[in-house]
Image 1 (cartoon, rainbow, N blue to C red):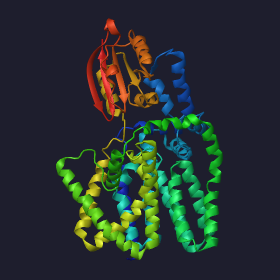
Image 2: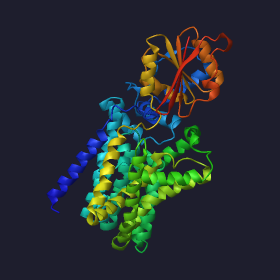
Image 3: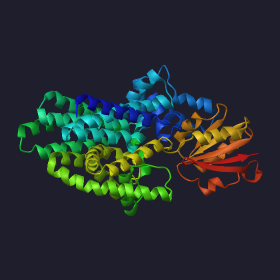
Image 4: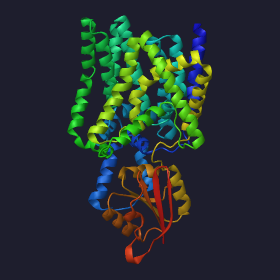
Amino acid sequence: MEHRYRLLLILSFLILGLILRLNNLAKRSLWTDEFYTLFQATGHGNDIKHFLDDFNKQNFPKLYTAQEYKVFLKNETGKGIKEVSEGVLNTDAHPPLYFWLMYFWMKFFAAGALPLRLFSVFMGLICIFLVYKVSQHLFDENTAIFSALFLSISAFGVRFAQEGRSYSLLMALGLLSSFFILRFERYKNNYDLWGFIIVNCLGIYAHYFYILISIAQFLYFTITNRSNTLILKRFSLSFLGSGVPFLPYFILALRHKGSFQITEWAFGYPGIINKIYYLFVGFSRYLVMFDKYPKSLLIALFILIFLFFYLAFFALKEMVKKYPKSFLFCLALFLIPILFIFSMDIVKGGVLLKQIRFWTFSFIGFILLAGYILHYIFSRNRFAAYFIMLFMLISSFNVGGLEFGPSPKYISFWINQEAEAKPSAVIVYNIRSIIFGQAYYLDDGVFLIPVSDTAQFDYAIKTLSNKVDKIFVVHHYHPTESFLRDRTLLGEKNIFKLKARIASDYINVSEFVK
């Protein structure tokens, strides 16, 4: 294939990828984790911690309106990298690189849903180009083109290129470090080795689980270059050296043990059946993602998934014969993260496999395998290839309409409408820090109170009884407990009565009126 035609194809994949990644980008509600990005990247992490601590100590000394909460999600002149770093260190379970980058990004573009997500879109487009370059080193030009095509139309790739979190950045870093490793293996160039050191260090500063990608790369290089002692020694020293700049931050993070308590919700779910189930669900998400699965669609999806993995068996058999080292590289990147997360779920009784974001660490290896598989299918049965690509396109376009988690936009608009401009209050029960995200879409004058137990809930009702006409009890993530949802507010006084309940986007709301 001529060089100019290859460039046109890659450019067309980038344009297609951009169209899919911009679909419904700003319209969809920000969700819980994206609000964490907003307040951390604007340097308000510590402010929010102190604000919520004061609620516990002072037992609600005053009421705050939505307008006062929104300040914590905006850029502020006095906030710099120091405040961002301290906030992440004290209040977040992640290392700081993504928040540092987002701090500068939002200083330039402003803080909001669209700017927040555009960074991930940009990283997603870089991933399409990088997967093309990595696949070139692993296979041939045609396979590289199909790898770029696969990522361009992948619903999984689109989903994380539309979210204001670090996962699109992580994929870009994983692909870039893979590019440097493969170049170093081929050319033994020190520049490529330094490129790997820098990118690997950045990856660990972006997410603790990035080390799984690094381990997969290290195992591949150790196995395939075990006979070349000098090269293996150079790489091993570089691999260890890439972690040295992270040690100071890691030591600081260990001293702030509270930073890691936020992840405790993910553990304490014993049993293996659901974990095996979510293992298969995760594999299927690499191909297609839909919010609802009617019977007619389920049949087509079953055919699609069966067809892809059936033909993948023969494609991978061919890959093992033609490109054994490349197969090992892809397999290591694909399996190491999944096996680690699966083992954590078994040993710790966790639900990490259920969380789609943890599958991003294996996705890099899957893209490269899928590019080869798609090229194999296309060269032997174009109808089957077109069928697979058509469903992937439909699914990728559908992702633009999916809410990623507890998303307060619709609920907040409903509260605004129901409030009818009367004095109203929202009580957010359970995850107290989500109060700031809940405020984002509410009218400025609505009062908000975060509570974490029944005593705080009772005090909130007492405080609000003479100030508002309507109370909305909001509960994120889980169905509202019956003791809270059905209790008569203010007991015998019976000042408030239940008017309506709705549930949307993983959020439940009960409306009470006088």
